[in-house]
Image (cartoon, rainbow, N blue to C red; front, side, top):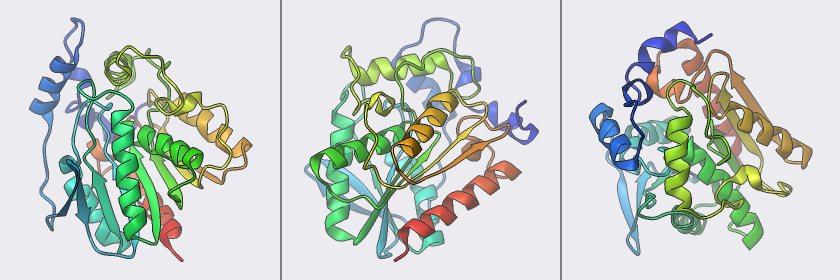
Amino acid sequence: MIDPELVEGIAGTLTPHLPSTPLDVATVRAIDDRLRVEVAPAVEPQFVSLDGLQLRVHGSGAGCVLWIHGGGMFLGSAAIDDAFCCGLAAALNATVVAVDYRLAPEHPHPAPLHDCRTALAWCAANYEKVVVAGGSAGGGLAAALCLLARDEGGPAIAAAHLYYPMLDDRTVTGDAPVWNGRLATVAWNAYLGGNPADAYAAPARAADLAGLPPTYLDTGELDLFRDEDVGFAQRLEAAGVEVRFECWPGAVHAFERIAPGAAVSRTAVERRRNALARDLSW
């Protein structure tokens, strides 16, 4: 059963507004633009440009969180998370760097992942400790970035924080609230561009998860990605990776975003921040 405190927030998400006709990127983007509410940050970010790639830098602490925004790899932007990143930087006394990676389908895999790799290299060159984090598609990209960094011999990642991550292109069915199988189909078709998925596109396909950084992973009981998230956490643990895992009861996709005042949202945010503070400490 859906947590009653989350029900009202679901009405403002994509799923209740989707037409019954076949979906495409343009249709979903138009609905998302209409529904999206942007919140201004308390402090505007600084900007770093890397050969056309923009990073939005919040705070000035010694530890760094590389934040990768969600949106199915075809929606959203780093700017939309300015208020979140600004608040996180202040709460942690850290630096939060948000990467404005290129979006599919105009820039399919591996372009978004390569942008995240460029951002990681910059963070590693400028901060002593880097944690990678992201929600939904951003969580999937964060997991893929960990695989890529492991296989390429760096840069070093202190920990990964994956919030209801999108990990498996085979999860394209289901009538879950907020983000359902129809949206997942659009997202994966856009991101893969007609090509088969490899482990760097869909980290759940990785044969070997050994050697990945300590991982905090959480998901919702009613999230479309729940089973792939649970399975990934179990496989990480079996591979010898330190895992901290939560499956929030009654929670839907992006629950803490759509209903920040709900008890489950406040608990999840506190748990995540405590875990980040631990991973950024010396």
